Image 1: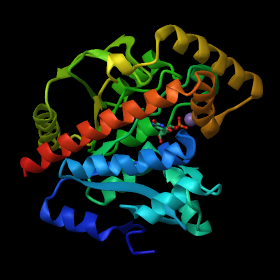
Image 2 (image 1 turned 30 degrees about the vertical axis):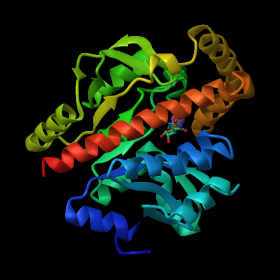
Image 3 (image 1 turned 180 degrees about the vertical axis):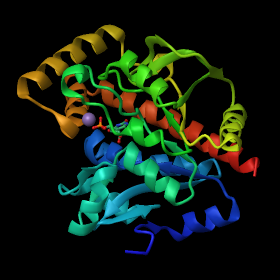
Length: 305
Ligand code: PSU
Ligand code: MN
């Protein structure tokens, strides 16, 4: 373990020192969100996509207790194939370090580690948010309060439709997280391009997003700029199928007493099985779009110096 508590890959450190754009990527998406062997393919393809855009990928995860910013290919393979990988949010990192665990980092943990390594842009699939039963369970992802303390740009396809979207939007406002839609004011719902709820602002280009982030930084505002990037309408899950399967997924989770950090993986897995893999294809399409846009934003931010 280094004094900073994390290991930064040489390529990422060199890019940070030279002002070459970097895009952070998370690992819970491939340790707990996607099934094998597709998870590894998606993780590696995301890195290739970032490189093709002239940006350095920094996939973030925990190997043998050490948080790594810029996992090697062998480390991505290890985390994608081991049964031992734990889902690690920010609060879990100290325990993982002491116990030398392997793990996938959530948006909250990944964002924290990216910021510590000087990486400013991060792409994921869908953010965590407020769960539908939150008024009873208090289940709100740590993604939201953690992002409220980190001046990053995070690209997602909104929050997952398994969540309570209007309650999540209220929390984003309370936490002073700036939200912009990419070429839309329809807030996306991960599997669906339009959740049915609106946001105020639409931005048209990576340059405009970089301008918003630069203004935020000049003002010293400490919170993340959330970029909501909808999946292509042609690639989304058909609304009827989505609503029908999601209804059953939520009922099954309640019946089985699934709670805490198991909830999101349970619901994603249920959707994948019960849509005959169609939700998986949508999840991959969502992620590809966010990775591409994140790379463009990282390049635009680096261009601003
Ligand atoms: N995006 C995906 N698949 C995922 C996730 C995001 O396409 O599995 C993960 C992220 O790591 C996010 C987590 O932080 O789901 C949310 O989990 P929770 O609701 O327990 O905070
Ligand atoms: Mn939760």
